[in-house]
Image (tube, rainbow, N blue to C red; front, side, top):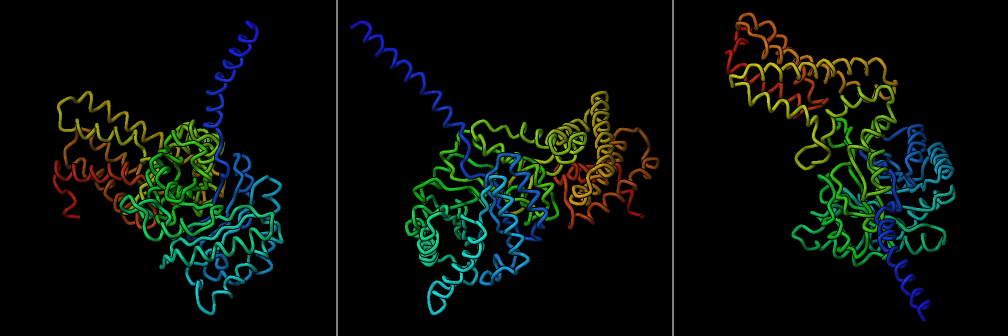
Length: 485
């Protein structure tokens, strides 16, 4: 009897001791479908770009790629037309390469601008879509996606009927296809549930589509400041299942003059793989520079609960730029934040430098010249290091990478030179007349920088703001010495 009870207690102990281990294993599990969606507006990647990206994705443990370039005319504008033989052959090669690398190649079509959900063209469009998919099925594609984003009409009933028909007549009929993927017309939470309650469109679509169809959305906004558990829970509840994430970083088609060189950031670490069906990163037109953020997104998707954005960013640049990694970090830190009236995503540009600028302006009106001089010396030292880094990158970056960032490097170089004049003017004790030539050099550079801002942006709220603040301060304290120029 005693042995029996000992065995029972031992069994219970061992069972209980496994609970935290299993829980930890579930928490640390990767998101099942993780990869890249080539879904940006602008010049699509070249065939070689895609081959290179597939190899890069495989090296980072990614397992899915969605072919969906918005400006591929056969994907969106002329979706009814079959791909020309040459393009079809390229896609076939991509499918083969993806299979070798254990990456699922997903073919997407965006028919929403002009598809007929009713009337005499309804059946013709359905058959046309079947033919489009059948051609891709013949070259080995086994997962398909339908996108209804960025279109003028949100017809939930028509979309549900169409995707369900495709799901039945093609995906299910084939027998070996993976679940269909859908991007709805309302694809971010604030639009899907504007007052905390599902919109009419989202409620009807969620109720109407087949349960096995995977839905992608972008988070709280189109380009949101991070991803929270509340967003995940609220959106999953709308559809009654885990949804997939289409993450709009480092995509820059809405701010093409800037590069998004930071990490995937501000991700709630309480989110785990059970909460997200898929995680796809939408990149820039520039495939090489996109790899910084893509690598960090891969780290996130492999283990959301333990993701460290700073560590992932340093690792990505170190792996990709090797002996140039320090210089690349000095450049990239000035080009992380993507912001306009509706997009707010990515880490702030040069946050540590911004703190130094802030401290400088706080003490400029004070009497502690020792502290002031020490801070100016620190900023001048940082300025020299950055200037040397830019020159090194201009000379040593691989041609492809340099071509993708040359404009921003040149702009930051001008900003760095203007900053140096500003810091020297703040530091040196000279009369206004003696300072005039230096200020004129500063002003010439600032004029050039501002003239180029329509086509190239970098460090707008870091070094760029410092230059604007300095100009205002100098004119206030030294008089408008440029009035006679």
